[in-house]
Image 1 (cartoon, one colour):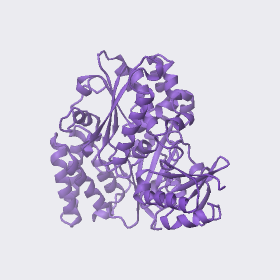
Image 2 (cartoon, helix red, strand yellow; image 1 turned 90 degrees about the vertical axis):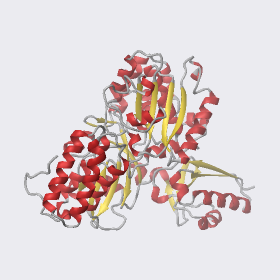
Image 3 (spheres, helix red, strand yellow; image 1 turned 120 degrees about the vertical axis):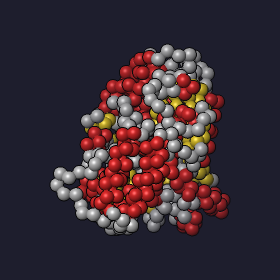
Image 4 (cartoon, helix red, strand yellow; image 1 turned 90 degrees about the horizontal axis):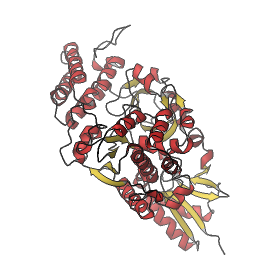
Length: 521
């Protein structure tokens, strides 16, 4: 009798977008034709997006991969019994250079388990952090998170432990944990991949946060453009509640935490924490004036922790293995790992998790394989549409918070978009202003009006109209946006504009900067 066959295929949105569901149907049909008893496990993605759909088979406890697999490849795979001699064979997945070079903490279960299989989640280390937290006093949890050096992965890099301690010290009948899953930056997909591949990790982190600050209610604010992530998170929340891991009497501890998912309507500015809170309250998504900060007065005026997906997902490992183990990763004040996302003109696009400190060059050239076009890298934008444009001469910049700040840039959410030498940087600067004008919530004048005038003026520059005078006006508008905007939407829009002017001034029809000459702002 033919041995039963177990195969693993992602149901991640990226894999589905290139035909993973069609491959799954063809695998099932081929198994029937060949008389094979097939178990097809739909997993998250390993992050090697250029190989999707990535099919895996386990032999002697080792996963072997084939990819990218099309429906036309399935018959030959069965005919050769998924041998490593098949043209699409990749060998042992964990032995691939892309995997070997990573330190996978957040994504260690992504691509390995069915994201809704709670037994597999627990078997692969899930709940260890929550159980450790239940054995500690709230102050002990916060002390561990603080000592780990964990900083917010949403862009600002604010120490998570300090924020938690502030909320824990606030006196209130009700406190909230809000996960900002409104991932809208260009070139970013780390939140989506985690929620689709290992939703339990995020839930576990949110429950621990609730225990730490005394919150019994949590909300996940998830962008509407992620229907697969929404479906997976809702199914995971229901499964956790049915298992007794969420809701009343968590793991028999007598402690409660309730979790609700809310779907955002697609506003980019709702990625800003106070605008997100306004939206959660059923209002128009506009930024709030600070103070007070959300940790003191947030959702419905109550103390609220707002962290993004990767921040909360980092917490279970910290509680399970201790602050020192987490502190051992990274460099300077950037501790732990970051999910770097390679996108744009890149040969090997995908998600690469590693400790802070590796260089842009290593990430783009060694792991990313350089540009897909084969042309030289000219510019790299890090940190989303409001991040700085960095020239090829700065590719040796280490990926860590302080080094980027000193270079007039920011890491943001870890999204990295690569451009080759055909890019028009004046057009990219104009796009940054257009993006702000389109996405501004309209509450403050510098952002609402300044971005429109900035886009109009840059359009004149690109047409060659009074270039020097109009560039001077752009710089003045950037100063106004930076100093006068209520939030990062307007405050950071000058970063891509001024960095493009600083490093690629020749694209604006004017002479490059010389010596110590700098752009205003």
